Length: 155
Ligand code: HEC
Image 1 (cartoon, helix red, strand yellow):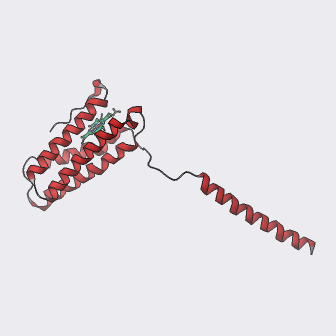
Image 2 (cartoon, rainbow, N blue to C red):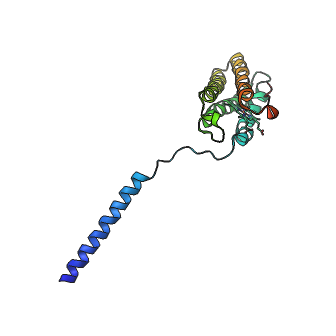
Image 3 (spheres, protein in one colour):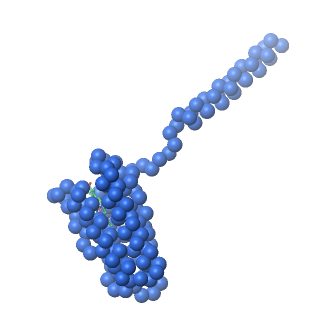
């Protein structure tokens, strides 16, 4: 009898301990957050640049047909969302600065403006949004890039 009572007590203690450990672990583990995978230089090269090229090439003449509008729609809203990744960059102290965040938010707004003009099929709006977007790319590069590596994004 004693052995069975002991066994039951032992098992209860084990189960209780397991619950407690799980509860503590849940509290200790920080919630998952955005994490940088590639350096900013690489982010620009593999994500920003190809979308800019799509915009540049498709805006040379007024877009004709659904396909051209779709390309512009995808590129502009992709670029707008990509600017959100600039808010969680690591590697340089300036990437946490107010100025960096302001520039990222300006670029995001301009890319979005192009997208809205695409939705409205407003070519002049697309062109002026695009010009402002390129200016925002270059403003950030002039402010934060090493002068020797300065990248001038061409309209
Ligand atoms: C908020 C700041 C910021 C904005 C906005 C920004 N960039 Fe950049 N970009 C950088 C920085 C910083 C680097 C340099 C990173 C490095 O060398 O470590 C860079 C580098 C680049 C490079 C060079 C990559 C290489 O291989 O050396 C290209 C191309 C580029 N950006 C394109 C763009 C385009 C196109 C836009 C706009 C659509 C844009 N960037 C907007 C900050 C910005």
